[in-house]
Structures are given as C-alpha cells and as structure tokens.
Amino acid sequence: MTRRWQVGAMMVALWGCASRPARLVVVGSSLAETVSFLGDSLYAIPLTGSGGPERMRWLTAAREALARDTTNLTARLRLARITADLGRFREAIGQYNRMLEAHFSDARVLRGRGEVLLRMRLLDQALGDLRKAGLLAIGRGPILETESLLGESADSAAGLSFTTVQFRTFFFQGIAHYCRGEYATAYPVFAEAARVAQTTDDQVRAILWLFFSARRIGAGEEGARVLELVNPEWAQRSDLAELWLLFGYKGLIPTDTIRQLARSRSDEVGALLSYGLAYSLLLRPDRRTDAEPWLERARSGGNWSTLPYLAAEADLARLRGRIVR
Image (tube, rainbow, N blue to C red):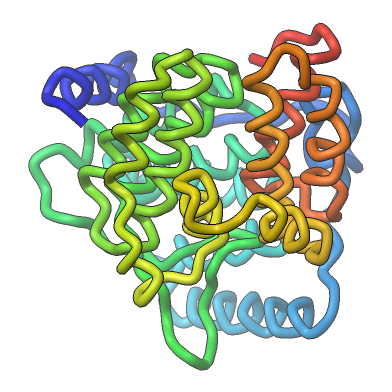
C-alpha cells in the first residue's frame, strides 16, 4: 500500500464531487426493490428466525426516538439504517433524500445513501454519493458509525460494533468498482480503506478484497505482498469469515476445510466462503466453468443485498456476456 496507491484512491474519492447531491428517484416496478445484474427483479428480503421480530422492535424504537425530536439527524440516520436493515431499500432512499435537503454537507448521510444504492445495484449513483462523502470527510478525525445493513454485525444486547465513515466510504467504493470489473481501480481504493481502518475486523475486510483485486488484475506478486500483511495473531481478535479465507490463501487452513464450511452454511458466511472458492477458479481460464456452481451457491440465500451475493452475481453476469454497470 504505497503512497502511489493512496494518492490514486484519493483521486477516485474526489472525482466528480463538486455538485450538490441530487434527490434520487429509483425507477422500475413498484413491487420490486431493484433489478439484479442478471436482469431479474429483486423483491423484499425475507427475515427469518428471531431476527425479524427483533429488527421490527428496532424500527419501532427508532420511529419513537425520531418522534420525540424530529430535528435530530442522528435519530433520522438510525431510522434510515434500520429501514435498510429490513430490506426496505426504496423507502430508505426516500429517507436519505429528505435528510439531504437540510444536511447535504453531512458525510454520514451521503455515505449511508451510497451504501444503499450499491446494494440496489445502482453503481454509478452509489459511486457519486460515496465520492462526495469522501470529500466531506477530508481533514476530519474518524467519524464513528455502528455497523449496519442486513447480513452484517448490528446492534444487539451485547453491544455495538463500531466502524467509521471514512473506512466505509472507501470500502464500498472499492466494492462498486470490483462489481463493475474495474479491478485496477478497486485496488488502490481498498488499499486506502485498509489504511484508514480503525479495527482489526475492518482491516481484515479491506485486505481480503484488496487481495481479490490484486489477483484479478494478474498481479501475482502484489497479491503475495497483500497476504504478507495478514497476521495470524488476528485470530485472537477477529472471527470473520474473511479472515478464514485469508488464512486459507496463506495455506494456514486447508482448502478442504473451507469447502466443508462453505457447504455447511446457508448464511452470509457460507456465501462468502463459496465466493472465495469460486474466485480462485475464476483465476484459471481452464476452470472457469467449475466456478459457476460456487457462484450460484454464493447467491443461493435469500439476502441478495450481501456483498458476496453482489460479487457472485456480477461475475455470473460477465460469464454470461452481460455488461455490469
């Protein structure tokens, strides 16, 4: 992660940031939330098990908090985040639009809307918001956020998992470029995300996608250098599936173990591990057809908003001759 990459990432973050954020209108079927990279309509995300009632309680609490003080931006951000947690992405976009009418210079609002747009596959609009958020965050100390959106760590009785606006601004920009197949552009952005990460979990997330990007542009030596950043002692502070994959690529976890874990899990962990296996096959032209079952497995769960689902869908679309924009 040299200075050259850091400057490149900052240029990506700042490009096109001069104008005031636009009010976005998401077009399409009134019943579907969005359209996949493969052209399919994507409908409401099912909430299974105990998670559904718990998230509905969060929604009720967020609405009550906002009713007590309708001018409280933090309360409005929390309501929009929980609305997105429930898979109501169009509704969340409307909430962010209304916030931007009065808070168009707040990086938190643009970052949040940018992430929702990314998960809705609206990559150009997502990048526009995330770049503007990056510009607004320049020169400021870490702007803390709690982790959000379905499939990731969320508020619980055990406490909160914190991240920063700066990290997520770069990280989700990188994901957008990665989904578009712009791996050389994604690489320095993920490098910047890793640089600004405040926690081991965030650093692990950025380094995994940094490694994916490096190898997709054929940079084998750079990929090896990325793996050198992975510290086995991180296992004492993180239990992310991203770390399991990095350990697998370093040869610290057998590939068969990763395969067994991927087959045994139907959640986002299983999706990420399945994508990690597919990704390795995609690097080999003679094995790309073998990657398709793992890509399909990565997107077999009901939650189409997760990052491994997005990446797998984008790769399948390219394998089938579609342009991902």
